[in-house]
Length: 362
Image (cartoon, rainbow, N blue to C red):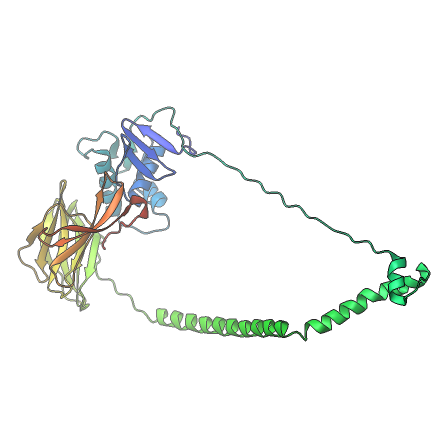
């Protein structure tokens, strides 16, 4: 059994750091987005037990209703990070009809980098007491030496008189009046703000209740989708028997058309051109990611460039594309801009990997 409180897991040349959420290979960071890392960590912590698909979905995506294709995509990402293929697995075995099993032998003495530091604070209270000589105070009050028993009533009434006088004088000071006025004004503003927020929330709830939802597909196998800028069409992928196809649907209820027939490939990050006349997508076949463009109403796809990450966005002029790329051995992420044909490529921003700029589409 694997200890649940371990933070580092090592097998072969790999190291999984749960605290830093990193996968390293021979000391170099292997790029792996958040959900794929959660999936890998769950498999490593399973101790060689079979994990069903339902167990994985409930643990990695708790409370979410997801298609099984999401799990397939993330399993493929984990396999790529570990340098294996489904046909020749080294670490991750598919259990047909059930789920997956992690079969690598973990090192028996993993190390942890983080320690436990406990800080303590001590708060002390100092009380200063002042003693007053009754005879001296009595002399001040009367101007002469009197008996302490006669001075006691005077000393008892003196603090009350001074407190009352100070209290009456405090309310007459301009600074105190100004502060009170500011406090009253702040309370009024706060009350008005709360009343406005409550009214807007009620309006928002009423508007949301008026929204009508309409189901566009009914086969339950949609993985990626996009809506045209004019709101008349939508493009989506369909998975049947492990084959993915590309379709175009009409929001007015007309029958959808098949833009690309089913094949053993993957379409990612569908995007309509800003003018709505074409659709851009990344086609993954094996280890190759290729950017394509196809007319919205169908036709022959145009190959634009290879070596294209999944995450991209088309400029309003249809001539340039922006995308993310891992650099410096996966330690940094760059935002890159180029022409759609791959020319004039340049990085406009580079940030550490932990800034997590990754998203499905820019």
